[in-house]
Amino acid sequence: MENFYNKLLENNKKWVAEKIDADPEFFHKLASGQKPPLLWIGCSDSRVPANEIIGAMPGEVFVHRNIANMVIHTDMNMLSVLDYAVSILDVKHIIVCGHYGCGGVLAAMDEKHYGLVDNWVHHIKDVYRFNKAELNPIEDHQMRFRRFVELNVIEQVQDLQKTATIQTAWQSKKTPSLHGWVYDISNGLVKELITLTNQ
Image 1 (cartoon, rainbow, N blue to C red):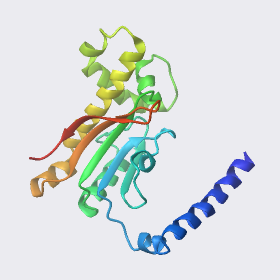
Image 2: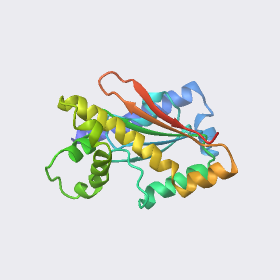
Image 3: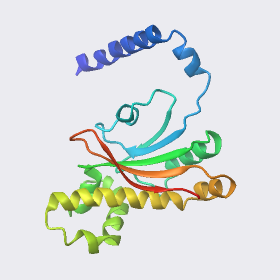
Image 4: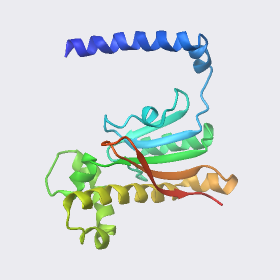
């Protein structure tokens, strides 16, 4: 474990050297401020690194992550990130990105208890309840799980649309556009599920 930690510090030094080698002004420009065009609301899963899977550079993506990429209207952390991204940074796009194999979504399908996280996945159980007419007939458990992941993303984008921040922004300007994606860890590809715009 100590070797892993020390490796992180060494990796940082190598990363800095590579960036400066490619552009001596890289960190100077980065330190001057941020104007990212995108807010990413994603899952906390360590296998889904926002910048990396879309090839974005530092400064291009404002990021909020939580278990199962949830947009909950009482989550002041998410709401604060959203309002700052839309009102101050003026992002043009918001992506809610889920992923197949999501442990939070799976926990919502189970009847098992996982501790404190049960309170969080309660919201995802509501998504299942809203969509049980579509989900229950899917006999294959893995296929039902995958579809539940997709439906959860779609529900979060629709909940995002209803927030005061988005409604206010849409009244005064056309942006941001809202997108729902699902990421497939097994092949690295994203699939677009829904896009909502104020047109």
